[in-house]
Image 1: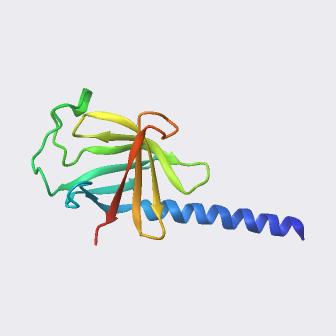
Image 2: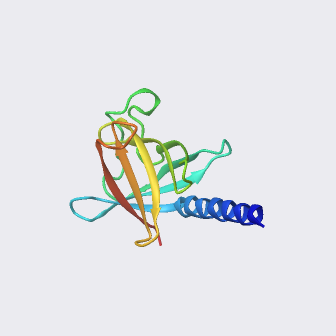
Length: 145
């Protein structure tokens, strides 16, 4: 009987984690921290390699912008269509994903964590210069309707 209960709890816990990650997928509006205006729409998807990515699907502000400060293959490429969320994998608790975030304004990559906030229905992104997420900032995105 105890084994059954333990198995059931493990199953429920893993299902809850999967549900959290599935809430991350889809189209999200990025919001300017200072003005509250919608800046762009990002499409988050799971690739065939099992990792999660996010692509700028539409720019509402600064249409036609290119990533001048980016390096490598991203240098001087259009921001619209650019992968800004890269190689994300599920967190240990299964409530979010972690990997790399690209800031097209600075051209820099940051350690990133993305999770879904059940209460607000918003996506929480945390970008930081350290892996633990101590030195960084958070941003909230709103699901595209």
